[in-house]
Amino acid sequence: MSLLRDAGRRRRRLRSAVTRAISVTALVTASAVLTGLVQAVPAAADTVPEEDTGYDRNTIGQDRRLDRCLTGVALHVGGPLMKAKAIEGLSGTEQQLRDTVGDRGWIGYGPLGQAAKADTRPASTPN
Image (cartoon, rainbow, N blue to C red; front, top):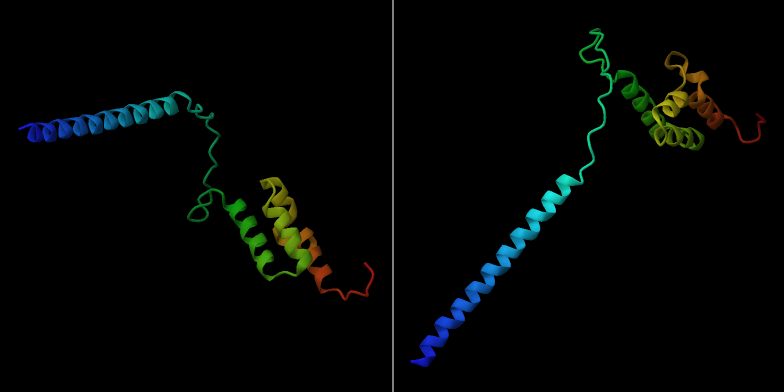
């Protein structure tokens, strides 16, 4: 008789241990979530949204995208100096990227264009 009673007791102890473990896990998870919500950084103030001029399908952010595309192409097709200048622009701020590209209509005269010309010059020719 005592063997059967011990098996039931062991089962109940195991079940209560598992129940306590699950309860503790739920409590720790809930407290972690609540702590994360309490310590969350408040949202920053809204910035002024860009105006869609309506000339193209979506003109919001068009200048930044075009600068990144031009610099990305320079990174892929340029020589060592042009690639270095492209990396410098892509790893900087938006203004540094804009300065790296220069005037898009006259890109050959901007910093990327000058770097491309320097890449095509023979090594013995002085600047």
